[in-house]
Image (tube, rainbow, N blue to C red; front, side, top):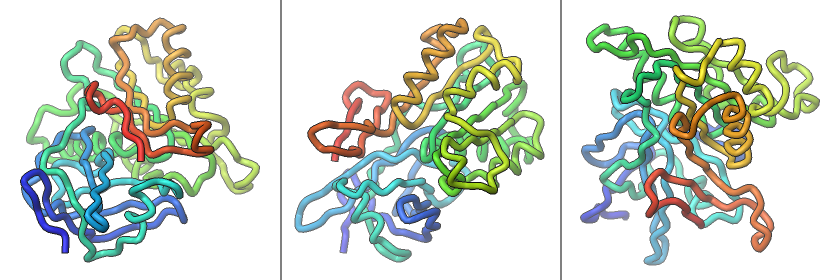
Amino acid sequence: MIRSTENHFCARILDRRDISQDLSVFQIDPGGPFTYRAGQYATLGIERNGVRTERPYSIASSPYEDALEVFVELVPNGSLTPNLFQLKPGDSLLCRKIAKGRFTLDLRSDRSNHLLVSTVTGIAPFVSYVRTLYRDWKNGGTPMPGNHKLFCLQGASRPFEFGYREELEGYSAEVPWFKYVSTVSRPWEAPGWQGERGRVDDLLRKYADKWELQAETTTVYLCGHPKMIENSRGTLERAGWKKDAFLEEAYYHAAIKESGGKFETRAAQEKQESLLTP
């Protein structure tokens, strides 16, 4: 039995939706009052034989929802996700009591357009943005989204890796302030795929032009694979975007020679949490 501590709640798995063998969406009861803003992350952990392992995960749910939702990729040699993927509804885990992260919507600048670019699980904070703004838009009780507009590009290798594509396409078809496009980089493995083809960073300039996004009025949010982030930033900087217009969260390093594979890492916005490894 996992017990709450001074810094942790005893959380509980409410439900899980398996997207594939190595991708799953977890619904979690945090175990206590848990306040966060769309775009922040929760730090989850498991304790085995007196050893506690924790990792931060972007929250896909909206602050309006009771349950926390996270979209997780299994890292076979990682320290946490192999144990996390063994959990089923009713099982317990640890959740730090305080959400962190600065990957929230830019409402301080004069830029009212928001270009959201992600790979696979990097879509999570953007789902939180859109669910939150959709709730505001539907109930009319807040000024959001106001004149703010969101434009989302998501890339994956194969179509089944899009854990939220249908939901986001639904929002895109309904509301005037959100557009969503998904693209696959290995379309030959999915003959029935009718959407965009290619890496998301290769399509970035095309859609920035199509959506008539200008550097002076657009904040860019890059979330997911570090190489995608590097390439996307370079493309947009050459098109006139300045450094202060970018927000970034890198989820892992794809190739670490000494390990021969992926590491569960995530570049948080705070310097003291800039790199976490399994």
